[in-house]
Amino acid sequence: MLRRFLKLILSAALNCADRAQDAVRLSRHDSPRGVVLYYHAVPARYRRSFAGQLDLLCQHAQPWALDGSTPIAGFWAGISFDDAYVSVLENAVPELVARKLPFTVFVPTGSLGRRPSWVQSPAHPFWQEQVMSAEQLAALARLPGATLGSHTVNHPRLTQLTREALECELRDSKYALEDILGRPVTLLSFPHGVWNPAVVECARAVGYTRLFGIEPVCLDGGVLPEVIGRVAVEPHDLRCEFVLKLRGCYRWAAAGRRGPGRSWGPARSLVRSAHND
Image 1 (cartoon, rainbow, N blue to C red):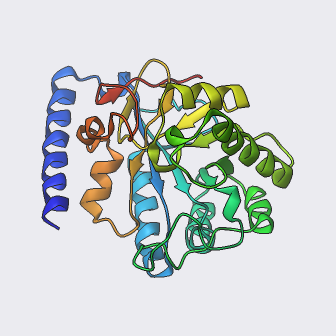
Image 2: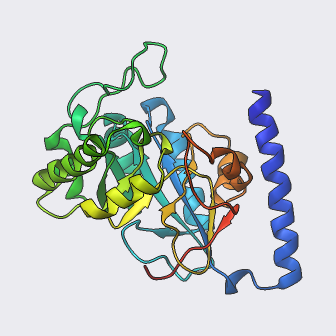
């Protein structure tokens, strides 16, 4: 709890600095900014609070579909979900569809229709979760605003695999999803946010055109980075926490996610983004 409070204080201070800078420059709308949010599970008991977060997003940002060009609006936000849990289908998707918000679900194809294979302990918060089945994914993909991407086959740390195993994780998950959906799959989210240049090169060679990590960056101007960072959100976050995350004020934590065994990404806390890919 103390760590969470300290993060909140740091992010609130950064928000004050951002607002002061905007006031001085008077150019907030001249330099569009954005974030990509990512969730995991959305249990039924948090459906109402999740819906409240979506309402806040609609008030503060222009929604962005992750497979499209970023909006020219002053501030925009993408919504994503890792692991394709059934609780997302049951509790998050109806709220998203009701608000006509675009969203992306990243799918680990090796656990379709069953409990996630990488969750090994009953103490894990997602122990009771189940990954969507092929039939559920096909139905989900037909909903307005829904996009599906790969989260590999078995959810491994990709930097620890041999080249052959890495190719299999990336290629087989892509092909499996394409068989289910009947259309190309070009988005990939790295499990655990772990990647390096070799992983990126392999992903590009397999056919992914947009890659996502978990550095909590704020995207700003220019071109989209090679690996697009995302901000972790929980459906039970406090209102003030969610707003600060939505505004990109947790980007100070991005530097702590760099280095071997974690994610290799841009060194700056503010990463440049684009209106067009």
